[in-house]
Length: 459
Image (cartoon, rainbow, N blue to C red; front, side, top):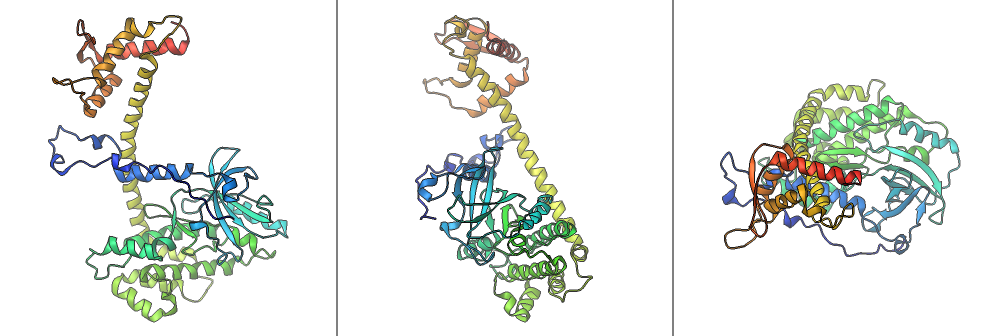
């Protein structure tokens, strides 16, 4: 692949959504700030960044990429700095974001370069993985071979999770270490580089849940590795790259029992690396356990000892789930609280959606040049009332003639209009020669009637 082209783009204008100033934060019970009508800034920015990442694209020709690969187009590289990795799969691999022409959705394509599929039966493993649907596993959609890149490549199509990072890049790179230090330096645990134990237990619960689904289906994950576990949200992780090693190393005989034991061993190594905040911690087990015993609970140490013990027929994921049962209950409790918080924020946006529909209807009606061969349709009858209401909501001025930009006034009026309350207001013409006293309910009926005229196509 050619050197990745750089295209300047307009950054997201997050600074336009400023938080309330300290001197206006302490309001009376009946007062509200404009920020209270919308979702919090951090959640809004996160969702906006995901939307931006999903829509990001560049010309394929400039990146040396094919225009289409099977049913996928608009490929965009997701590898950092265009780097290709061959350490995990044994073959050079790269990841792309692409849009499917069948359903219009965005998927992540993992390309294994220079791989010639010898045994077609290997693809049957992919079918087994497709039947697994789990919240902590990146679902695979299909796998196929292609020569669109100019060689023999094997492509795996997965669900795309925008703005995801790996556990490796989050905790084991220089940037990740600096971010962890900055976020934890005020903790009183004596070591600012510690990953909080609640976070580690959250990861353990999610990985154990994923392994339960995989092992219960007669498969092995084989991707319990910091570079293959994605962090897709707030302490939310997913196993990525499912089925790839099964296809690449297919020999007709899958030793699933041995591979499941390797999953548990890799699980233990991952926990040690997270607890000690170092990928080299497994090289000195004694010192690592001394470190874990000093800063973490005995339950975490006992779990690691079990995972690193010799393979036995009784050593399985079910025993691990029994060991961490209380921690799983805590994780469920935290997830339910977070779900309640998101539902509360969603209810705010539900109200905003209703107001957008109202403003859209008013936009269709007001200032319409002509309808049903009548140039003055929007200026007569009920439509003139709607125009005056638009001026009342958006075009008010103060005693000095300066525009009044009051979002609270706008939202209050639109909410009352949507509800159709009986409260009356006075509407004044622009020449101040006539006044009308009407209720919000009457204005709502006028909007409904005028919009029905437009949708019916006749006056």
